[in-house]
Image (tube, rainbow, N blue to C red; front, top):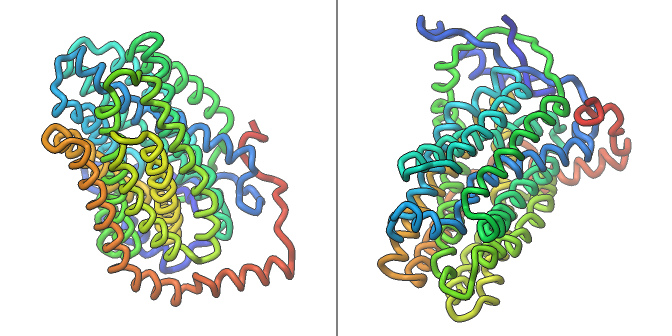
Length: 468
């Protein structure tokens, strides 16, 4: 068998030490060796991807991630069907997030050792089956199991992000990740609107049947559209691959700092969105009206690409700090939701802009830590995202049952403030990293001079849809 690399540039000695350690260690007797990462055919593009190919990655990400959030405006209807109390409604979201966390640990790392195109296609096809199971669930236990399965397969989103990042050139990686993440943001927020409309028209189960058909279609298109990697290397045990994630967390400070930041930020994000349906479900608001607040949050997608570009220019630290300040401020108008829907709308926009700016910046930074371990880094980072989201969901619905919307707002603001304080505590280490690696304003000026001197590389030869 051969090993395959996803990072296009020749790896430096610093980037390959962990991989070498993995190869040197003997594989457990029970662990069947599998192929290490595969590298797509060279693209030759400035960012490694054409706009058309990047757009497909964004659409596929949006379709996949939307399945995690369809339930948010449907919680009340689900509770009525299965006899769940308001305090127990968060279990539906939490089951999805638990599945998502397991998928991040067990499935996403495979992107570093197997054909990413094949992995993505298989996940989409299995996701279609899981969605059918959730939509046809006869009892709450089956529903929770189906939602956990949907969550575990929805991590194909992170496989897509890692694949796109591996195809992008280092100077454009933030921009590409930002564009792909825009699709994730739109998928997350439009999911609530789409599920609300479909639930009003044909019931909440229709949402999952329709999504199953869409997942199947995306999987078939991905089979033809995604680049076909070429194997080039040796064997790695799957269990040793998983164990290396803990080693990455222990040794890579940027990865560790950003993972813990994700836990807090997405705890705040989930505090709002997992509980928003409860104060808005009283007449005259329908599923569609509740879901329509997701469209307001699509403004968050506007922050993704600019945040990626700022990261490419070396301003990731200050982009993160500014976004976290906005996140804290957003809870003031959100707290007024019962008094003014306009205030809630303003707060939703501010919160989503802030969260997505932090998210794009963090993913771009951690991929740069060690491109050869890109899937494991992004998967590990998203494990903390999932923990934060699941905890925020169950805590917010429980808090609402005890202290109402005011209590939920205090919870969200507290998590946001903790995220800001954590950033302030770790910002000095990021500043040291920028100074030692040539990031920050120095990298921006250097990159500007290089572009002025030789022009922007041609995008001819980009792989992806144009090959299909």
